Amino acid sequence: MKKKIFIAINLPERIKNKLEKYQEEISSSFNDSCPIKWTRKENLHITLFFIGFVEFDELMDIFSRVEQAVENVDPFNVDLETISYAPKADNPKMVWANGKESSEMIEINNQLEKALDFITVNKFKPHITLGRVIQWQFKRIELDERPDISKEFDIFFPVESIEIMESVKGEYITLKSINL
Image (cartoon, rainbow, N blue to C red; front, side, top):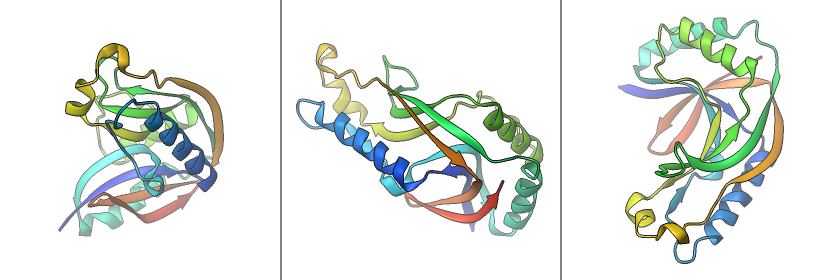
């Protein structure tokens, strides 16, 4: 049976609480019903690397490769800077909390790419998906009535581990935590 696997940075509870408050603020900025399906607080994370569907018997090899890829990585800080519609403001699909690009996260992503024999087409952009825009609902709102959700802030937190996660019917399960 295949498992949907990704590598993530889980967030401290205090950061999840702050982001949940921003979700509530954005929801209340819409005149009628909010056309955004919010990510549940317990699922908020930064995806470092999406692996995809793998067989159960491949997991031990993946665990080993990821451990080797990050063995020389020291703990670092993540700095979240803005909230915005994403990936494009004029045709949003999601709402993101955007992270500042750091050399550490880019290096981890590059090491994971090498260790797992992947070629990534898209440039890594650190972000947390706060919600997904319900297209048909959003498009019914006149352009001049769509709230500007852009917000600047400075939230940072330390990263001392990364997690190998499995996605099962909208739930994210930590399969292995690797200390940095």
